Every structure is written in structure tokens, then in C-alpha cells.
Length: 506
Figure 1 (cartoon, rainbow, N blue to C red):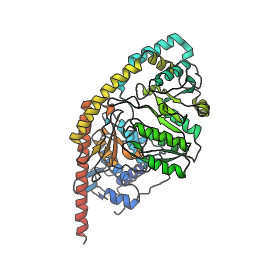
Figure 2 (figure 1 turned 60 degrees about the vertical axis):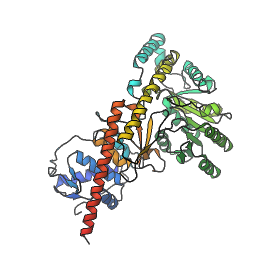
Figure 3 (figure 1 turned 135 degrees about the vertical axis):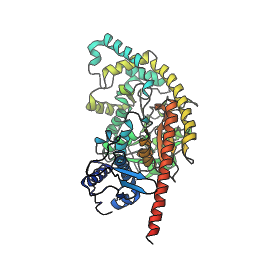
Figure 4 (figure 1 turned 45 degrees about the vertical axis):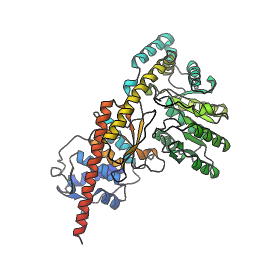
């Protein structure tokens, strides 16, 4: 297209799709692109500029929302008639959250993380967060616990705690996990600022820059972020319905020496899968044989509403090879940031040293409040109520998916946890493309390929059904389905238009 010459700085911290937006907007405002000019199809422009198609799709979508562009089914994308010399008609902008940028090398395309921030706009039915809904939080009981702690302990509750944590809470965690089959002493328990910090401490304590950790593929995005921030290599092992593939893992271990194996054996994020007992034992035997510690992330272990509970890896471990990480964040109060690590010997000593360097200690007030809630049985009561409601929301999600998602879509049926792991038909738009269209309809989900270490999962999406009440699940799934069908129709129209256009040239 004459005059369409936009330079992309691939070294910039600015996401590529934002650079493209600025370039197109500048050419429209300057009159270089006049009203009515037809822009290249998204895949043609992506190929021409050697960038990902999702960057073009994102840019076009936001420029349409701002009134700079207009789309016409069967014809293409055009500069809006009103958008010239900077006098475009403003519309509901998608960009408030996207005005804040950062270098985000943890994603296949840095624009994806930026787009996920847009899901936080008021009015969006948001399935993208990895957290429980706020209505699950025992606010009244927490308020009473905080007041009781302050009345009882006064300024001591606001002082530094020992790096290992508040001693009564460490003992309470020991007693708490014993009900799961984990045997340990309070001296094996380190209190942390949530499970995310616990995982970060493990990585810092046991893995050096340039070394490798092994995980499943897909895996928890937070671990991928930690590894990349610490300049640690990640190697993803494919999964099946039972979790990480041990045959492929063993082939890798035969020729490599990773520092850690990281897994979520129960209600894995994002797949929701549960590793069966026989595979848990096989994984532990393999890790022992190859002398690789296993980091077990158990934050979803107790969010079970169907089926029989399985013991954590730490409960099955007879060789002290498992470092167990969990938290009270997914169960009850994410903002309190209270998690824990259970480890032995030199591993524990290293973790304490790293914890001391990281933040000295976790909030003493929060630790004491959580301890009081545990003593009063609030967590146990809350779990029963939460799991009952999660079952109701899971059932609503399964019904709504069957009703509204396009033919050929498949999803899991989780027995617990928070997530529906969905695979879209590969004949239609990708999950990232659908995300942009769905956001226009005020609904959001997590794009699947951010959970992969190798950029796979383009047609996957993770839906946190736990975040929404059944009526919002129904409406949100309806909007996602409508967005998919509208986008699929637009692509068919675009393909037909381009086929006609090409035919006219010959």
C-alpha cells in the first residue's frame, strides 16, 4: 500500500502491537493515510512486516475501538471516514491499562500480557485470573482475628518475625499438613509471602543462572516467569490425561542434569488434571534414581469437590527428595500472602538464607491472624463452603460450554480446582485472536499459549469458572461463543474477498 511504511523497533520495551498502533495512528492524523483507505489484511501485513499476526489483529482491534478504523464484512479494514487530521470520533477505549508497558520476555508475544491487563476493566466478565472470587473471603472472621491479635499482642504483632516464620503458625502448619499425610516437624516449615514467593525462594536457593529446571508443558505461568526473571532455563515435558509424561522425562534425564523437577500433581494449573497414585510413585522413584529434587506445588490440593483425594507427593516421599510448597491463598485469602515451604536439611537452611535476604520476614500481623483463623477452624469451614460452590459453578460452566462454544471445541471435566481447559477448533480463530474479539464483548479468559514453554497451545484457553456466579458464567460463555462465530465469519469473508481480488489479477 503506498505510504504505508512503519518502522518496528524490535529492541524496544514497547510491545510491537503498540508500536504498530502508534505508527498507523500517526499516518492517519498526518493525512498520509486518508479516510476510506483500505488497509492490508492482517495476515498480509504480518507477513510484510515480519511480525506475528496477533500483533496486527490487536492493533486493528484497538484502532477500531478508538474510531480510527472501521471493518466491513467481506470488504476488509478501512480508515474511518471521520478519522482524518487527528479528528477521529472517540469511542469506548480499550487502552487505559495498556498505557503501562514493560519488557515482558516471558511471553511468546509481549503484546499478549499487555492485552490481558485489559481484562481488568470494570464491566468485563473476567475468567482470566488465577484466584478465588472475593465473595469466598471470610472478611468478618478476618476482621475479628486482626482485632484480637492487635489487642492481644500489641506492637509485637507489627515487629519483625523470625525469618523462618511465627513459631505458633509453623507448628499449626505442621499439624495442618499431617491431615494430608505429610509428616514433618515445625522446624521443617518456612513461612513465605504466598506460594509464588515460596517457589522463587526455591529457585534462588537451588538453581544457578543458566541451569535448567524441568516442568510439565503446559505449566504454571508463575514458575515460567520466575525462571526467566532469574535467568534459569525451563524444559517442558508433554503431558497426557495423567500429567507429566514419565517416558519422555526419563529420556531427558538420561542425557541431562536439571536442578529441579517442578510439578502440580493435583488440579494442575492450567489443565486441571490430577496425577494418579501410580504415576506419583513412579515420578518419585525416577527423581530418586537420577538424584533430582522435586518441587511439589500443592496450592489446589484441597479444592476437591468430586472423587477420592490422593496423598501429596511429600506424603509418599521416603527419600527426603520432595520440597512441598503451598499457601492459604487459593483456599481463603490471597491478599494476605501467607504460604509455606516444607523442606529438609541443607535445602531448608538455604531457603532461610534466601528468605532473609529477600524481605527479612513475612508480615507478622498477617501470620498471627492466619494462625488464629486456623485455630478457630475458619479455614476448614471455608473449604467446605467454597468447594460446594465451586461444584455448582463447575456444573454451570460445563452446561454453558455445551450450549455456546462452537462445534468441535473440547474441554476437561475437573473434579476440583478452578479451571476449565478448553481447546478451540483449529479451523477457526486462535485463542489470542478470539481474546481480542471477546474483549469487545466485555468478556475475558486466559490465552492458552502463555502456559507453554515452547509457544504451543495457540487454540487453548483457560477459563477460571470459580471467579463467576452461574448467571455470569452463562452470559460470559454466550459472549465467547458469539465472538468466535463473528470472528470466524469475518475471516471467511476476508478469505473470500482476497480470493476474488486475486482472481481478478489473472
